[in-house]
Image 1 (cartoon, rainbow, N blue to C red):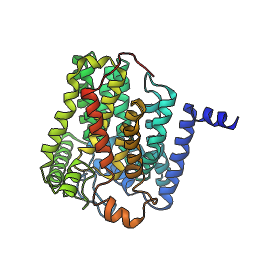
Image 2: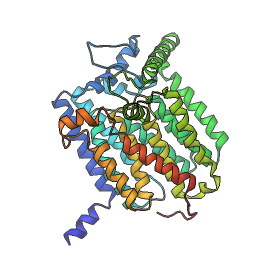
Image 3: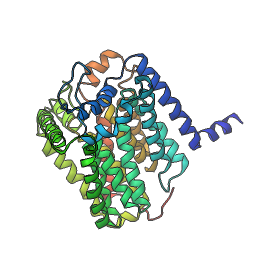
Image 4: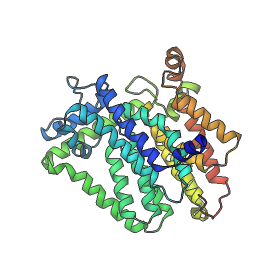
Amino acid sequence: MKKELLANLLSRKSTIAVVLLLAGIVVGIQTNAIHGYNNFLIFKTSNFHLIHWINLYTWHKAEYMDQFLYSPAFAVLIAPFGVIPLWLGLIMWSLLSCFFLYISLTLLPNISINKKIGIFFITLIEFVTCIQNNQTNAIIVSCMMLAFICFENERVFWAAFFIILGSSIKVFGLAAAVLFFMYPGKGKFILYMIFWGVVFTILPLVLVPYKQLIWQYQNWWHEMTLIHKSEDSANPHNYHPPLSVMGWLKTWYQVEIPGGYIQLTGIVMLMVSFIRTKAYHSLRFRYFLLSSIIIFTVIFNHIAESPTFVIAVYGAAIWFVWEKHHILSWALLILMIVFTVLSPTDIFPKDIRENWVIPYVFKAIPCIFIWAFIQLRLWFGKFSMINEQ
């Protein structure tokens, strides 16, 4: 009876909702108590800087450490959090990520609740790590997922909206746009992307004059260019190797190829998958391709950091629930849980984490292996036309 009750609880959407609600509240209270809200201060004050014509992208060390690297539109979207008390803002910010994760997961089409529960629990620890750092990555990956959901439901207008929304936070959210190759309404999608792109680009005009907005975009471009140059040789601005293919090649094999070439290679490998047009009818193929795109945005990111990996883990979880379960798939999942999910936690001794895990980018390696395996499946695997759940 107890086993049946537990199984019943673990197979409900309400379980996901309750766990996320508790996680959001607890993390919000925790970050306020330990003053671990530097990233949130970066977001919260960006609206103030925007409306007072202060450079968003310079260092403001009197207010917080690190830099604001998001779009000017994000400084508008974050405005509600700038007018509420800090403690409440931290809770609401965590709950916002929880909300996005919940809807992006529970609305996934043609997939059983058991698969959704599996994705959730594989992703949960990494998700908590993300919101403990007050990061936006859970929202970005949720926007990518919601775009996929809209494509599947032939709502290309909203697919374009979620892609632009995600990319207005971090540009790599645009990667989800390549999904449109698999769906009808390509011309409409391109027009909708232009429409939403213009809307989000000029959104700050509700708060600042045109010349000020142009100045902020120039500042943004300048700062991102400097960071990209610093990353080309896998020498990141935060003094740790990027948790990506670039960092792995340098730290393991002393290979120093400019990041742009590595990213281009990854793009070609990803886009080759779209050649298999006959496989588009397979739901498994479409989910595998979604997973590949999501993981790609992290492992080929020249400034990938630990909290970014909620994106890759979410993508890997999608792959795993659709993959045939054999020794290799289980081994890859376990490696990811151990080195990607658990390595930043206190389960790993501090000496091992600081002397091995971080310098040798162990967090990224399982996701790189999983992505390579998914690509092989996309290129050479057999896919049924039956939309199994």
